[in-house]
Image 1 (tube, rainbow, N blue to C red):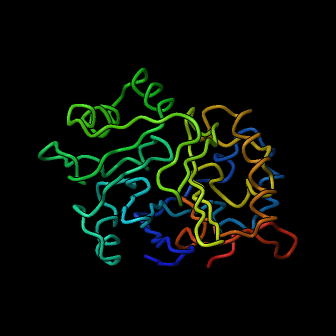
Image 2 (spheres, one colour):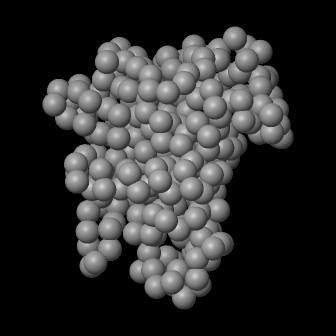
Length: 261
């Protein structure tokens, strides 16, 4: 867990677990020689390692949990405890998107009840409609029950969560993928979600990524966001970048890098 402040907004970056994927698998359409040119951004085994993160934002007396991690064996609840946030303290759970590594702690697997008992779960409508149609185990276990418990709130387009937190569309990774712009006291930060999932894609935004649902739209989103976030230098809260997910974009040794806070 790592804490920082953006104006009057408290930001807690939480790490639920860690992943690693062969880089050539992550970028299936890229030439292997080109991929291996980024060996400095991989492990010795040619893998891209990444965190699986979530975040808590405290704004205007609202405690907002961004995504719920991978579950069921991750560290999300230990990280929340370190941040002194009890599950019952969470007022809103807002999802950047509905992949399983962002929705894994929605529902208690024994009782079938929401793990954040006082929260309303905010979900991009385009993702809800997409995954409702697709179905599958994650839908059945972690998503569909939210509707039955009456805790579901669907949103579309740019949406105000508080006057310091604005939900903004960053589609492509999934149909309704959403980021969060934080603006408070003259300071800004950007909750990225999975619009950019690793440092190779920072440098090669037009490389297709195996996790993206709509390649062309995801590429366009990266091409828009990377210059914007590099120029602004604002704090980024990322799901899969860096040691804790908190950092800034900057250059080092000729590469665009995610520099840990």
